[in-house]
Length: 191
Image (cartoon, rainbow, N blue to C red; front, side, top):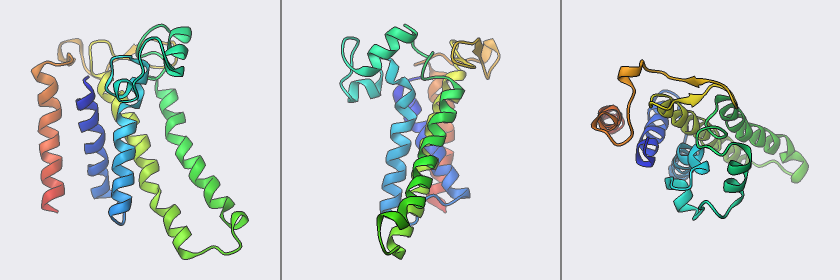
């Protein structure tokens, strides 16, 4: 899938989830959460030199830690960063950091103020957005002809039968993303 498709699916998924479980309380929380959704929905493609996130970070085949790790570990796109086991790690890291901040709060300061507690609580949306954005990327790529590996070096997994898989850049990709995005926008705007 294209970067814009991943972006639309990731941000749309977080917006839709917010209708069920509120992820932010104010405009600052909204901006942090949407920023996390944008980054995480593109993050899995950091191993691809031509991807949107690699271009944004100005990474190419010859520079950067990610490119070095990619070529030494796999030599192929959709192997290292496109596995559900890595997605689990990505999903848990922000929660572990948030828990660490929560537990260390009384140690860092002599007074635990309401503002500090509310700030940590407001980060819940960021943690959820990081997980949802990354997982939405994997789900979208699992629907393509190449699929994604189930585990680090395991077989390919597909969500759709061969005849229904979506090729990047075809009209089906725009329809699969466009129709649900219009519905999500309608839900968000009308509520």
